[in-house]
Image (tube, rainbow, N blue to C red; front, side):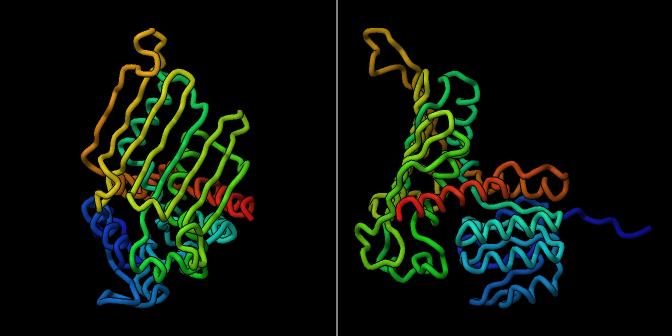
Length: 330
């Protein structure tokens, strides 16, 4: 009899910066992944050349945690070599690169998942369940604000190099809020947008992005994505026909976005409660989003479960939206 396989997924990680190290830790904790190779041009890792790493180790899956410019080549090569891919966001520098990944995926028959981990935050999952329950009615409009502060080295970061990144704060961080707006509301069309360099005037990419969007049903959504918030901020308001949901704060490694909570209010016309209805607040003390992503990737590879969050469809939809926001502003 042949040796029984352990069932673990032989995995390589390309890019061993903050995210690569985090993914390695999370996949190790999951137990279903064997980290067989690590690759980064800097530091003492197994490989410094990603192509050599994939061609020599022949993993079943690869985790791509590189700068945006390198993503397309790695994803295409991996899928073409029969390797499934987990890729960090954004899915390339622009819509054309995302569409090229989609074409490679369709030819390969493998799995491709992107790291839109905000969908797995507890506050977001609770809000999604609340909307689907019908308790507060249907969403009629939404406001999303996601902002951070630039550092002393902000000008020199690769994310602000247009050739390496493809865009500024909208593509780097605002993409998460846009994905959440699509997650809650569906397809959005851009009505108006403004892409600006308001404080970092010498940057080649934007430090601020504003967008007004609308669904076919007439639901409205606004986005403010900012690198000049100075005090980190995450707020998502979902205004519904019979109530209101507020997501405030976000658990991250830095804890700089404040306490993560989800609050909802139901419409109440009692004279004493107009404008001040009963408040229901849930607080969250753990961020399990990375673990949920690893589990979904594993289930897609081992159990044939379709990718539910961070699929190529999600990636194309949000990149089409970003493309329209940039074009509308110009």
